[in-house]
Length: 451
Ligand code: SF4
Image (cartoon, rainbow, N blue to C red):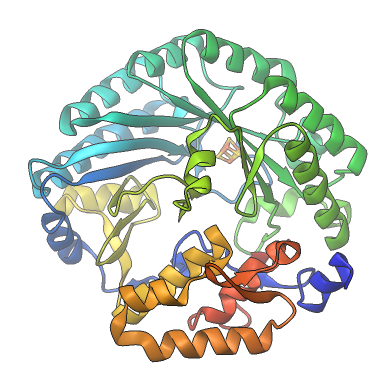
């Protein structure tokens, strides 16, 4: 069957499904999981464990219309500086609960706009967090950088503290697209930041693009890709724009009539895939690309790709600690999300030192489903033998799931060396298949388009 007909048969162009950056997705987190769990799960992290840390900076100088991130606009740095003081208090509290020998293998600053911090505040903050957590020898320090905001002094401060992966949001360089999404960012300023970081010795540059944006055309997207390839980032991610104005009020500024049709969205994604692969990038999962020198490429080749809130990753840590408003922590036992608004977050830290307001306690069944979803998303396979070895009490569920999937997706799946495997042609359907494994997802919830 022709590829588009096959994808259409399984509803790719209409389906709304979770991105499965976590299992269960964050909209299934429950009230009643909070500081008490946080306290005991932090204490239960094994001494000597290597953990990952995420810090959320929920402020931006401008609010781009397309963006559904949890962030607030500010014209002054006063609320940002006050927030950083609260972050430092949260870090002190959390660190005091973790065993002494725990080390930090990764630190990622995301937002919002982490580069909104002044160089002085950033220096103070990084001094605190690196003072609290000893780093591993192969530590990764990554920051989301807004090229329209980051001063040279700030970039140099990040480099001084060991920045080794810079993540730069591009979205699209076409002026008409930027006008339609309320985000001016030209190629020259982006290229200047990339050149500066490389000259300063930052070894890895990531870039994110969006397809499905208003007024985007095949031709304009080719032009953006040409400009991106000139900068030769080490790693790329291309995401579909999710138009959810009922969840992200800013998106009402976007003219719905300018949005590309689902088939055009699909074609734009295919253009990016073809162009990046032709330019020497390996395709990683469904939406990432990496040069052979990048660690993500290596993790994929070794079958060790993982899924986290940033998408695909080579991070192998079992524990992720999230600091800041709305940040999510992941433990073996479950998830905890901090209070989403900066005011509620700050109040909670002032009251108890912890900001967890909801979360999820993983059952054995959840752990199995999470593993199946991650295997499918990362390896396009469900290895029933490996799963049975890891979850011996749940053999029946594993067998039943494999049989049900085989029955429902006969022309997409086959039995291969890694168990139940997805045909290459059908990779774009992986989230739809994952949804069938997911007991939690029910019709009518607000998810993003499958393409
Ligand atoms: S795209 Fe970046 S700068 Fe724009 S609103 Fe979102 S987080 Fe802020």
